[in-house]
Amino acid sequence: MKQLTVERVAAPLSPEEAAVSLDRAGEHRIACLNWPESYPYVPDVSFSVLHDGETIYLRYTVEERSVAAVAAHDNGEVWLDSCVEMFCSFDGVGYYNLEANAAGRVLLSYRVPGEEKIMADSAHLSSIGRYPSLGDTPFAERSEQTRWSLMLTIPKSVFFRNDIGSLCGVDATANFYKCGDNLQIPHFVSWSPIDHPKPNFHLPQYFGRVHFM
Image (cartoon, rainbow, N blue to C red):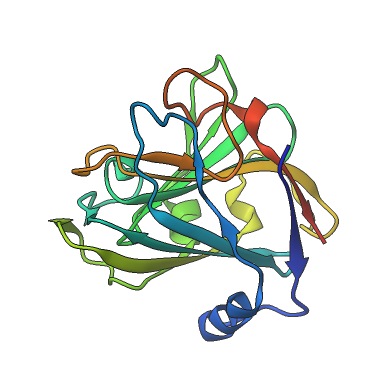
């Protein structure tokens, strides 16, 4: 099982400070090719992550053959676009799927296997800071090699089904993904490997272990 330690910074960071700190943090590759026969393409994707006890600072860096950000609203179909994702569980019962496209549109829900998902409301969604390198205006697919990044600042309050007093010392499970269901070259890659016959990210049994220092 993959393991990840999320280092703590001493104080809340501005977006500019977070970017500098994430430059110094280690990068983690999202490169597990779980369905090579059907979806052999692997874009160059990595993430860096820190926290300050109250907020998670998460940045994805992507280079891919084409890029799209069609979904124009939060909780839209961002997974059809150039999409980066973090699925995480703090209670071992349910998990959150936090997904974002290249223009910073975000989808967030809480899911318990076998039950109906619970979508995040507008207040929780609006509390997530988004800093897309390609700007925040939606756009159709661009068929050109593109390097882009997306930094998210994620307050612990967005994990609305758990009462997290502080992230310090918390143990969780998570997986990180890159997909693009509707791109010219669809792809589905993960940080922690998935053993399933077809693309499916909603499998918490394959999440890796995460420790917040």
